[in-house]
Image (cartoon, rainbow, N blue to C red; front, side, top):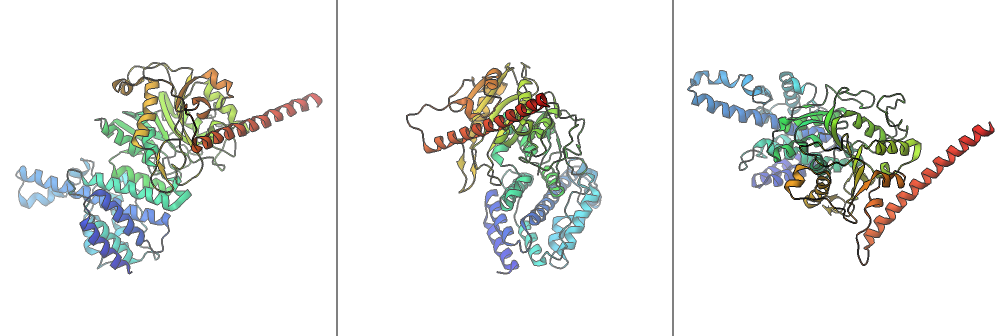
Length: 538
C-alpha cells in the first residue's frame, strides 16, 4: 500500500480515536508502517523530533489564544492586537518557547504538500533553536536527506496534525504529548533490542526507585541519564504529592549525542528545567558536574561495561580502584562522591555486583559495607528489562542513616535492609514483565517502614521481617556471609508445605551465584598465598 494511502487510512482511524491511549497506539502502529528505509535508531530521532515540534507549537498556540483573551479583556484595540501577540516576552515569561511563524506546525502542515517538507522541517528546527537558547544544538535537522521519502514525511506530518492532542477533557495538550513521547521512547527501546537499554529504563523500575527515595525537593542527579526518564518520574512524584516540579533541580549527563538530544526534548516537553550540560560527554573522563552535591541520585548505568575511561589515580576511588573489565563499582563510587551530607541514591546494577570477588570488587564492596553506606538491596524479578537478560538488582545508598527528623526518623546505623522481589511482577506480554502498583507499594512500604519515614507513619506502617521477602541484617551478619549482598541469602524462605518449581529455580539461581562467588574468593586467596610463598622463597 502506498505511504499516502496508509497515512490517509490512519487519519480516518485517528478521527475515531477517543482516548489518549488509542491515539498513541494508532500513531505508533501507523508511524512504524511508514518507516521505509530508516532503521529504528534513526527513525526514533526522526519521529520524536516531529512530536517535539508539535508540542512546542501547540504550547505556543495555546499561550497565544490565552493572551488574545487577556488583551481583549484589557480593552486593547484590535489594530494593536497583532503587535502584542507577537511579543516574545509574553511567551518566554510563561515558560513557553518562542516559535517563529514559519516554524509553527500550522504553517508546516499547510505548506508540506506544495514545498519540500524536509526543507520546511529542517528550517523550522533551525529557527526555533536560534530563538531559544535552551534548545541550541538540541533539535534534529535530519529531514531533508536523500534517504527520506517525501511522501512518507508528508504522511507523518498529516498523521501528527490530525492526532488532536488537545481538547481531551480537562487534560492539557502538554500532558498527552508528554505521555506520547514516553510511549514512543518505550516502543523504540523494544524495537532496538539491546541498544534500547542505552536510553530507556522500564517505567515500573523507575517508579520503584522514585517511590523509595521520595525526592520531594532538592537536587536530583543521574550520571547516565539516557532519555531523562528518571527526571520525568521525579517530577511526576512531586506533583502527585501536591508539590511543584520547580521544587527539584535536575542535573544529568549522557554519553551519546543523539540520546542527549532526546533527553533535552523530553524534559522540555514535561516542563522540567534541567541542567544536562552544554553537550554530551563521558561521565568518567569528563564529569560535567564536578562540584555537584546531590540530595538524590537516580541511575541505571550500563551493566558490566568493560571498555571505560579508567584512571587508577582518580580521587573518586576512595573505596578501591575498580577493575578494567567492569565499571559497576566505578559507577557506585562516582555516585557516592556526588551525594551531599544526607544524600541518598538508588542504582540499578547487574546481580553480579552483589557477590563479585574478581579483580578487587569484593574488597570495594567490603569497604562500602564497613563504611555503612549501603542502606538497602532489592533483588528484582527476571524479564523486567526487555533489552537484556542479565538479572538485575537495586542498590540504595545513604550517606547518613542517623535520625534526622523530617522524613527520615529511624536510626539504622549498622544495618542493611534486604528485599527479595524476584517473585513479584506480572507479564505484560509474552516476553516482558512489569512490577504492578501493588508490588511497588509493598517494596517501597517495607523500606519506608524500616527507615521510619513520615509517609510510613501516616500509612500506619511498622517494620517487621517477613520470611521470603525482607530482612534487616546487622553488619556483623553481613560480614559473616563474606560481604555478599544477595538478598536471597538473608530473607530466608516462605514457609510452605511444598515449594513451587519457580521457587526451587530461584533457590538454585541464588545458590549458584553464591557458589561462583566462593570459587572467585578461592581463586583470590590462592593467588594471595602464592604471592606470599613467592616472597618467602624469593
